[in-house]
Length: 268
Length: 246
Image (cartoon, rainbow over all chains, first blue to last red; front, top):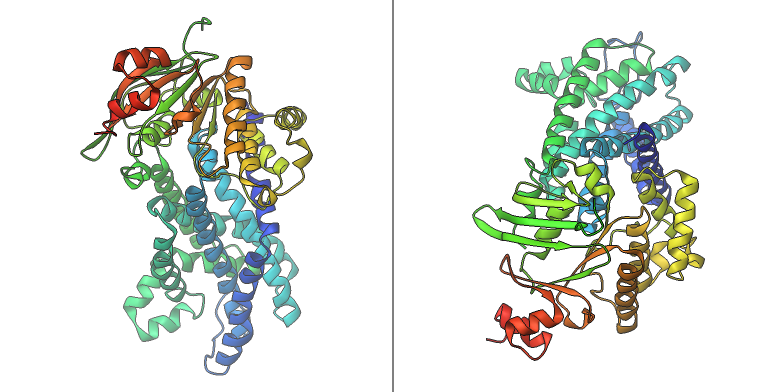
């Protein structure tokens, strides 16, 4: 198998995902509307209630809308990661996942390609959201928008691999709704997306600890610092380690000998 | 590989879901140019067998070889020689016929020019070339199946697996697919394994493999099966072998 074979397959998988993304306009619009609702309505409503002290990377007092923007960017990626794994469950039910898995390439490579394709879609969605936020007056320094690319790739891959891992355990679409409730909402609310860590600590030490362990918090912080042109080493390492763990577990989950596939397949 | 060597070989294959044995010592071979019909009632183990041949899962006992390559140990080489039409529809509905086929070609590492040439060749063969720019959603069931067969053949496989490909199709579409696949085996020396529970899909020269409760109950040509079972028709032979009539 040549390097070209791998590259062609990667290109094919990404092209397919982008075609699907273009064709599913409602998916793009809902991915954009969700964070905008939070920004325009939720954040505006809470603006006066929640005061945010000066904390890095911010150098001055900021509006609540400014604070939650990185969290909403990460939320887009969280939803996208779960949604592309939702599409994998759907694909598997429809059978096109089988077409992917029966192609003559190592399974880990196929899964990584699929993950990368989904991440690129999430990066496009994040920038669309940031463009609207910019028009709304939430403007980061220009270098921040550039520095955000690697950060978004890393966080997108991490959240996508979590979705991939979950999809390897889920047999049917219906079960996925439950996982959304038990994964997306706890991860989002128990993070620094909506409120800074010290605010959580003020109310509960336990919740603060949990928020710190939550890889989604670290993803939010990585995005937050990157958006202001700064590299946050600890969150970056934390997210990278989480990515490796989730991805390894997902690859094991999809392994034909060891994984969950056949246990789930069950008798005919 | 010598010409007489089987394109698909399954040797003493067993597989269990937990404690329930789904396949029990299944052995058969399909040679190039041969069309083998895997006949069995629902729950006979056909889908399990296909899942093992396509390596959806592989913790099993026994051997599966495609063109001499072990599916478990040399899976990439083995899968490169295999074309599959799954029972469930597997095309992207919103993508065009050509986009779907190009995607498949890329998974097999085919350069674009070669892929487009092969797409044209396979679609023309089934009178589908004029539909190449249409989305799959706009095609009828029979045409979608034709596209899936074209896709399975794009990379020039030695073995073609079809898992009940005519389910849900009308009689003319079914007949067209049955005739086309039989012609493929004969003209292009592809080994075909066709899972079915429909007796009227069998042609006179086909090899039959009757699977029931995870075991091969009979295998051979139509005449051999009739002799083995002492039945007057394949329908009767099938009923005797699977206890369907009792």
